[in-house]
Image (cartoon, rainbow, N blue to C red):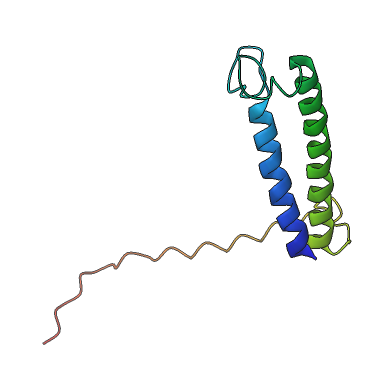
Length: 112
């Protein structure tokens, strides 16, 4: 079930990216649909195309959010966990510092 929902999520994501790039922006941008003599202008008016693409974008955004939440719930198994639920961990005790070694009092003689 997770695999099917993941594939649907990826397809919705790709469609959402495509629909957003097709839309005509205020400054021109990558607006492929509408305007000029080609594209979708023969099919629908500029306003109708923008209205349709806005509705499709909203629908795909809702589908994206629903699949995201569904994947999250499936991954966690439905149990709700939060880092705020657990008490803070006690800091680990510091290791005691090793005792300093005293320097030798007399130089050692070489062993023969």
